[in-house]
Amino acid sequence: MYSPWKSNILGVVIRAWMFNSGFYESLSDRVEISTPLNSWKRVVEGVYLQQRSQSPYEGDVFHETPTGLLFYTYLLKLNCNVLHAVFILCDVITAIVLTEATRLFIQDIVKDQQNKLKTCHKDAKKITLKKEEVANVPQYVTAAYLLNPYIVCSCVAMTTTVFANLILSLTLLAMAKRSRLLSTFCLAFAAHQSFYPIMLLVPIAIATAKEKQLLKSVFLTTTTYAFFTSLLIWFAYLSTGSWRFIESTYGCILKVPDLTPNIGLFWYFFTEMFDHFYLFFTYVFQLNPFIYVIPLAIRFDDNVPLLSFTLCAIMAIFKSYPSIGDVGFYLALLPLWNHLVPFFRHSFIVGCIFLVTSVLSPILWYLWIYTGSANANFFFATTLAFATAQIFLLTDVLFAQAKYDYHLKHGVDLKINGKEGMLVLE
Image 1 (cartoon, rainbow, N blue to C red):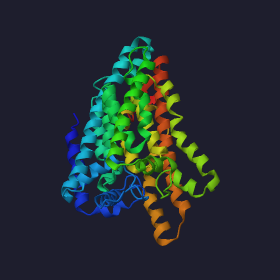
Image 2 (tube, rainbow, N blue to C red):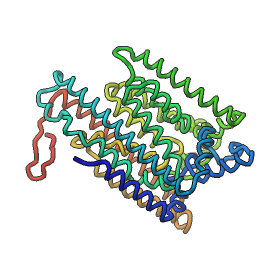
Image 3 (cartoon, rainbow, N blue to C red):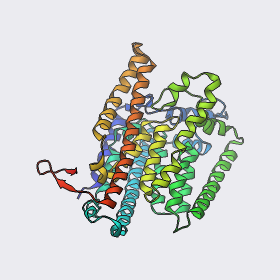
Image 4 (tube, rainbow, N blue to C red):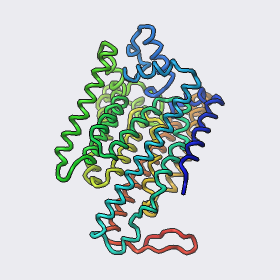
């Protein structure tokens, strides 16, 4: 059986080696990794201003919450090597938490299928999941997180996305355990930092709902989340003595005033936007990721893991300041859908686009910024292709699940290609 400790050790060794090799300086300035919201250099600047009795929220440098500011103040008192160890440890803990969450999710998926066997087609038993077939999936998630280049670079660049991913993983674990109190508590922290995770309220409400009590679960989940969020905002106000932080944190996320290039879709569009259209299209862009929540919840209300994965992917694609650390988080959950691989149709194309854009992005950035032989259109083309690849990947997973559900109900003739030993649908 596959051992997760190999991935843990290798992931730690890679990060430690990159820290000691001085990769921080080069990676921390990469726009694909560091954004105005997660840059460690901005954190250092914000803490510096705070220690000199100046509000870090007066300018346009620091956009973390006061709760985060307090946490980072203590972190910056640590020795440099100890600080690096904290980032590595957070990544390891995130991987362990995701592994446990995946184990619970896969158990629920298998159990749900076993309960529905009577309604399945007799031929569909060939593609139903068995416990022994998915036993190693959680360990694959561990490897997919700790050995993912996007996550490794995000960690070595010391972005605050490392802590955001940890909180988000705890939210998923609490959701898998069907704990409303713990999941809303973790979600309050996650949304307090980056706002977009608020859409995970829907899968939490579904996961914690008892039979035919969905509306009651929605009410309880929403009120519990609102209570924890109110406490966090009140604590933030008490620690700063003003409400100015709201404009610098949530205002920056929603209004998108900083158009520093990143891997997202906002910066280029709003750079070209006329001022009198700016507010309207800001509302349109910000509403875009949220309009998918209810339709997806209706379609996949019986598959909370898939719904949660989909919403995490939508957040990473359509948020105002995304980074590759956000992308790496949901990519680490892909092994959950290992059983859907025979139903994928664009996996090769998506993989190629991910690879090509990851290589071209720093090259075209260099040509644009340093040599002047390219322009913003070249770099934006790679970010647009990268976002398109993510959308193709997400729709591939959703359509594969829809096909899988169809074949469970109506049956499917499967045969083994004797030459290659691969599943072929007929």
